[in-house]
Image (cartoon, rainbow, N blue to C red; front, side, top):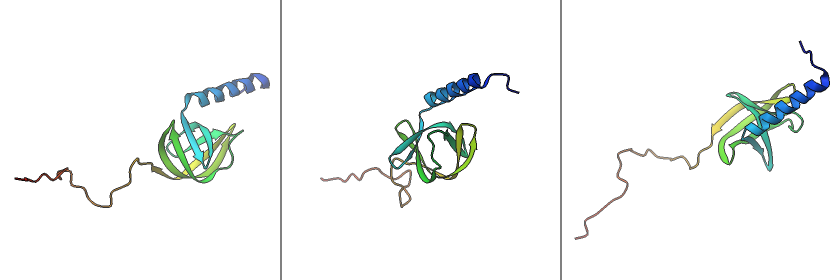
Length: 116
């Protein structure tokens, strides 16, 4: 039950949303557009409904400047002032290319030869 006037409830909701945006450094990048996340969960994330388009496809998730995931997403549902997006795939972003061969952990790091 809601006992607050609509104006007061709207003000509280706006303050809650502003606080959520300020607390998170998480961002989603779609092409050249960047949107701050309100919530990040194991199966998806949510954006502010007022500036969130119905995103679909490949996006990148960042924590500040650090690239965390490359995700395939679909707009799932609207929950109040939030638009929730669900992951179809979330791949951890690596800072180097994967090796295409097995690297033995005991392998020498350099070859030293005797030049005498």
